[in-house]
Length: 117
Length: 107
Image 1 (tube, each protein chain N blue to C red):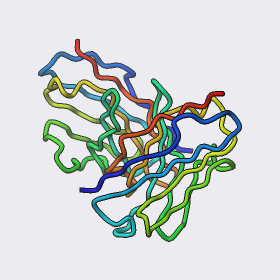
Image 2 (tube, one colour):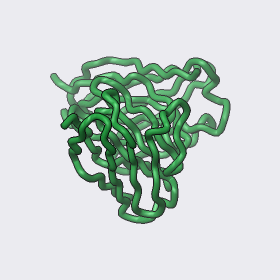
Image 3 (cartoon, rainbow over the protein chains, first blue to last red):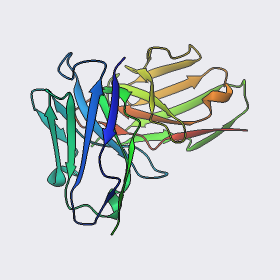
Image 4 (tube, each protein chain N blue to C red):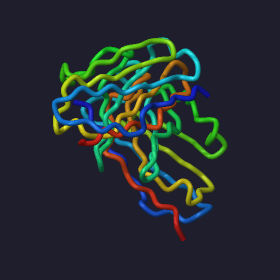
């Protein structure tokens, strides 16, 4: 059974960079034809796809965030990571990582990141 | 960007009744449509992919239909554990987008 777990700071100051890591267990991040995605959800609102990475390193980003987003993968650690720069209060949300085959069949539990000074 | 519109925003249903949720795409997404259920404090759970295929472990009371721009999620007989928010998601291209959600509440 594949499991995903997000980790990283829960509080980030405005203008700084948000950094999160997703650790995949129960299977190799390199097996199968999967992308690995980041998705976020502000409190009481809907879901927004941030971007995704293939284990080759190929990435796609949401154009609305593209200038600020970097997603990377470390296959040796079975992890992928998100960096979002120049954050503002509008970036406060629960951040999820998920396995991406078009649809998202496995999700992490989510981690709340608050942007505040 | 493909815009996904869900209706209604809130659906009030009595336990045991049928619930019908709609999702419309701003352009054709073929059958590249998924449905998710989300309960408070939890991650979304995949219910349906390919517009009509139930994900592993999903009860048969959940069914999906449609193609192109019009999709429906039907819950044939609502159980207490089905009261939640439901999202549709298109993955017809690399830029995945979600609908705004339908909250199914107890009538």
